[in-house]
Length: 141
Picture 1: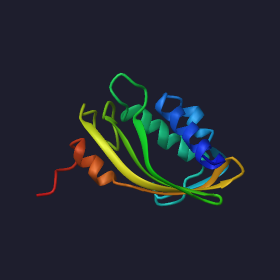
Picture 2: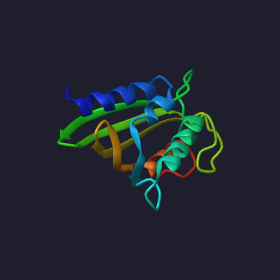
Picture 3: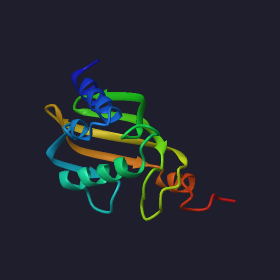
Picture 4: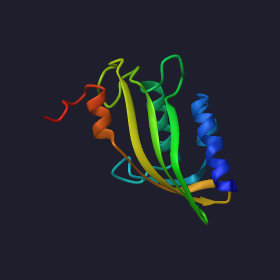
């Protein structure tokens, strides 16, 4: 496993251990995360986003959701993977009260590294599917 893949795996393990600070150490202070908000998120916004995730979408008996990586591709300073974040809606999320429902959120991300930290990230995830799973939106007919 190359250094970038090992670094991301270390961050994923921190996430799954409920260590948000350990996970966030993956990101450089200059991070620009695209795809989860209308404008690119800076480090402070990234931290707030993931604190909201940890506060509302954990797994039963855990302080965090479970993050699983599927296909992983590394090319130079770029890391790409398909991921699934799964758990239970245990708190308010996007204005919807805790439902106690299980969910699985699928997505794809590309990270650009400078040294051992991510400086730019592009992600997409099925938040519409997530909102349907937790009952915030009706399922399509």
